[in-house]
Amino acid sequence: MSKLNGNDQALLQLKDLHVWYELKKFGFGHAGYVKAVDGVSFDLKQGEAMACVGESGCGKSSLMKTIIGLNRPTSGDVIFDNTKLTETQGEDLRLYRAKIGYVQQDPFGALASFMTIKRILEEPLIINGFTDKEDRLQRIRKILAEVKLSPVEEVMAKFPHQLSGGQQQRVVIARAMIMEPKLLVADEPVSMLDASVRVEILRLLRGLQEKHNLAVIYITHDLSTVRYFSEYIFVMYAGEVIEFAKMEDLLAEPSHPYTLALLEASSDPDYRNALEMSEIPRGEPPSLVNPPTGCRFHPRCPAFIPGTCDVKRPPNFIVSPEHKVACWLFDGAKTDADV
Image (cartoon, rainbow, N blue to C red; front, top):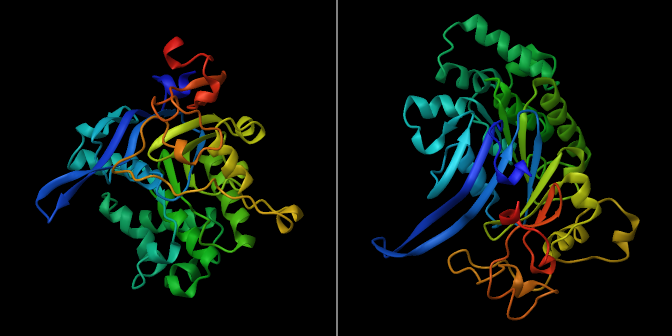
């Protein structure tokens, strides 16, 4: 399957990506590493949407910041639009980042309170060399109309605090789209919004993806929203990808015990949620400084196999042509090495 094994036609390729943060003792001596991303590989084609799901602290945000060029890989490669992130700096890095739109989690915190909406949207255009004022204005009007903020002239004159939370997030999306990017990274874009607004924002993002043939990475901890948005899902735990599948396959047949626990704990609207509540298995996510040996989920896993899960790191077992899981419950199935 090309999704995890490499595809020359992919817009974005991650190859055995590691992002480790060094810890210092008393500000000077080396005290270890936080292994935030530890061996992640996947491909994303133009026009595809992929969701990255996991608990807080699993490495989702570190992965995202590396893809958009805020972090540098410790090892491995990020290749976007035929450009290696490790080989970019200065002007090349600016051009790299201009092709990626970023939708932040907290819309109010992401918008400068002292700038009008017009100035907020104009800023990336100025930074990237758009000198024609009328051209900038036309781009701003066009993107505000696309994200359904009207009347456009009235919205441009407002400050962020004069807008509702949903309107602020539409401005954040407009800013992410103003440079006509090829890839959109949405970091939990609806988690700060009212439930009534969330589906509207997800449908807006889906519409923009289809209209502009965007590749999208949708980062979330809430599996109840991914069905609105993504073709593929990968589940992260303690810096590693533990399951990867098509969206409908994973929701219909989750294979990793952690994925199953996430689904059971999701907040899907369902009257049965008033009668019972499922929880993620006992314990806390492991330390990324000293992660457990073997499968990193084994201290919390209800299907733990002593002498195996706590000793050997599981490979990617192939459940079906586009479904892989790193779990010893599937020992005996083919792996990446067999393909």
